[in-house]
Amino acid sequence: MSKRHEKLGIKQTIQKEWMDRTLRMVLAGMTEKEIRQDLDQYLSTQKQSGGIGERGQKTYGMAIGILASWFAPEDDLRGFRDEALKIARVIPEEEWLPLHWAVISAAYPLWFNVAKQVGRLFNLQEIVTQQQIFNRIKEQYGDRETVARNARYTVRSFVAWGVLQESDNKGCYKKAPSPLIHDRQLAVLLFESALHATPEGAGSVAALLKHPAFFPFELPVLSGDTIAGSSSAINLLRHGLDDEIVMLTSG
Image (tube, rainbow, N blue to C red; front, side, top):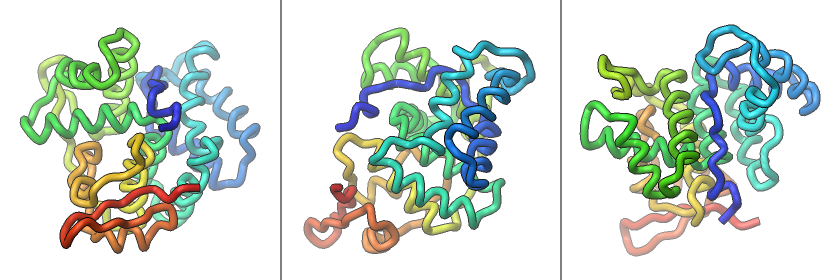
């Protein structure tokens, strides 16, 4: 288990445009120092709500830490990030949202786990409440105010990204329409992000294909052979005729 599986880290709402801007700079070949300097200046004028307004460095600095998932990943996520960059270079910018989702999920498993609880709730009902989400995430991370606060910022980010829609009642959300992921490599990257977000680094193919953390997307049905064959970071194990397990390669 990596330390990232225990940390929270989503300390403010993250706008998708901030992620897009960061990815554009990485693809342009800018250095980490150059990207940090740009974000330092840009985010000082960007409110969490998406509006324009002056902010203190301590506040927007928290956002830079999350955006760094793209330009300064942890060592064991560098190869994963590099694969995400390969996909980003060949798909339209308007289709980058699943890439951001994968990269943040791998780097900040809290994001993935909040999404998982939201997806589970949507499997049961059409409208989910903020309190239902918080209650479920506290069962995993503990009943602390910091847990609820980080979960709240994560949910607000989901709304900002357009994957959750606010209903007429405050604190209640409905699911936005799910785009179909056509690109096989992008789907495999999402599956790999789930393995990185899971302490065991492994999961059944059947569970991944229907994983609630991917509630914003409609994913293609892929075999274990296809998933493992599309990523050098994933191994396939079989138990019996139908039970396929994929796991991260070691080293």
